Image (cartoon, rainbow, N blue to C red; front, side, top):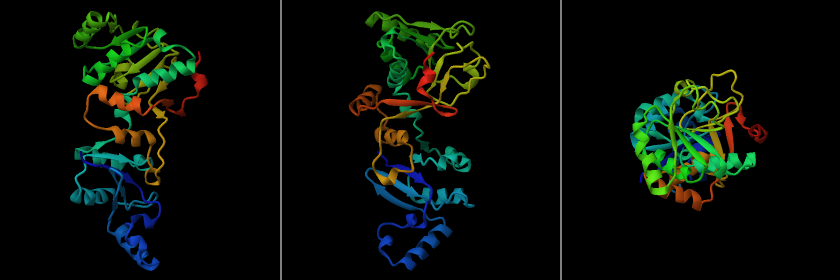
Length: 305
């Protein structure tokens, strides 16, 4: 498996020096740093199973991001990368990387494997039992991860509702659950009725326009797993969560510039089946510790109606 690149901005010029260069006299170190900064030369070093890449990019200074990244791509095979929290704000960098067929780890891949932990967190805060809850899933794609999430959650909650624009894609999973486990789920798509009383909604892959076609319960809790979504309805006064925090803590200084969700995602990221990924998460005892909305971390009091 190819190593994952961690891209971070430059905080001080000595970060452009490798371990050997750091042993030189101070004036030599300064000359090397100056040359690397001027000619867009990054410092690339291995850290555990990853590669940490310090870009000759300084926040607030005019930098040629395209030249910097092109220099890296010429000499390195990059398939998966993690971008530091500060570099995420650089729109030029993000738009330049997307057409390069490079997979940017954002924490979204991991979020889809944390559906149970997300519901577990919500129920804990609301002081209710997960097995007594009725859950609504918005889903279009019958991918393995979506179907396995449906199977897992159907066994954990009181009633699972599938809201979809394509009934045929999910008829087989409905029949499988009933015939093999005796579990009845509902499949529906009435724009005015389906979500009108839905209190907890897991949005797996509906777009912003698609979800806003529905009449949504004004105090609903919506968790958007795939993309950041905004709810247009002026009467909506519930929770619209677009991201999350987990209990994973990074103790290595090299990773300090990166989001902990993304660091953990990079540790377990692989093309494997749902069960194996879930077993890793359970073995690591990963828990969702907060959900994040448009204005930051959602206060726990907001979950209580």
